[in-house]
Image (cartoon, rainbow, N blue to C red):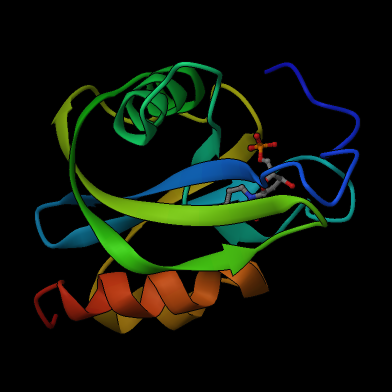
Length: 143
Ligand code: DCM
């Protein structure tokens, strides 16, 4: 996807919102390993991306997961909270249900894993994603 090179330029600019999906399928949560940028590569995240002008967060989530993973999803509820990323960027997370397709790492990722609750600690999540992952995990059946 196109990468903004700068964040907001004045303290009065609102933060850029990054939406990510806690994507569920059959009692498992999808984790995606970033392939870029270099400082984030190899770490695992809830897949998503930046909100574009005029989009609702749910629309952005559907678009991002279509672009990045090749799947159709149905957004659910927002996971309460908001987490700072790099300066000027915040992360907000929605649950989402897989409607169709098998996720493939088409953009920004080089590996995907479906994790049961007991497997969630087996990947190295980005620090900023951990609170949302913990909250998402509460909604998964124990395995
Ligand atoms: N990001 C993150 N956690 C996520 C999704 C994205 O920390 N679950 C960060 C990585 C990038 C920025 O948000 O710095 C924009 O993401 P992308 O490059 O995927 O658009």
